[in-house]
Length: 86
Image 1 (cartoon, helix red, strand yellow):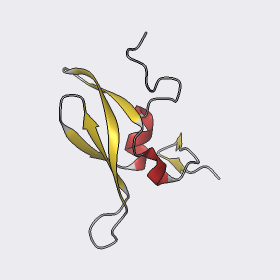
Image 2: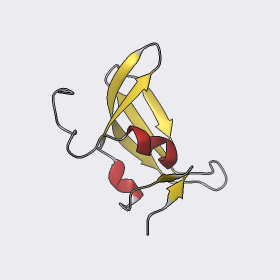
Image 3: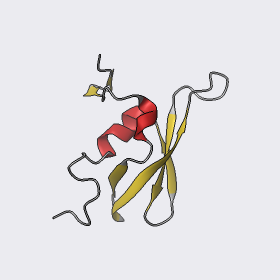
C-alpha cells in the first residue's frame, strides 16, 4: 500500500532505502543544489515525531527532512548518476 502525506503519494519502498539516493532542491535566491541522502534516523517517540533523513548537499551543507519533505526533492532513477540536467 502506498502512503499519502500532504496529499502527495509516497513511494512503496522501505523508508531506509532512500539512503544513497540523489536529490535536487531549488533554494530560492541561491540556485539549485544537488545532494545525497546520507543517513536515516528512525523516529524516537520521546524526542522526534517522524523519521528523519539527512541530506548532504554539494556545497557541504546538511539538512534533515521528513519523508513528506524528502519525496518532492528525490531525483527519479532516470536522473540519478547523470552528470548534468541535459
